[in-house]
Length: 109
Image (cartoon, rainbow, N blue to C red):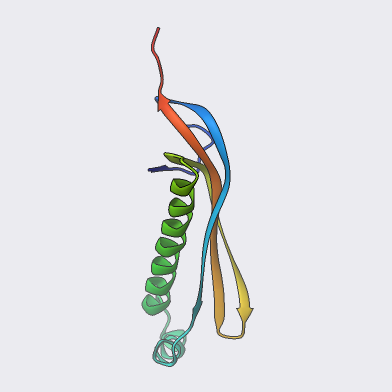
């Protein structure tokens, strides 16, 4: 499965559009991460616990989006985008979406 944030794929031709696909996950913060983040706010620096949480959330959302594309018979997802939103205090949604397509290698004439 090819996944890209561009509208086209170099060396490939889009032959079919299968439709919009999406994947999401909602994650809650954990008290241990909150305590460490509070301490880090005092001294500054990266909040590694939150970075790891977002990385895992993004991976899971993309996997769910790809699974939906596969169900539609697509072999690529183009124009992929991400968004986040607060669901409730302490929990956020990470949402990925794109267009499921069928691509074939370009024919060079």
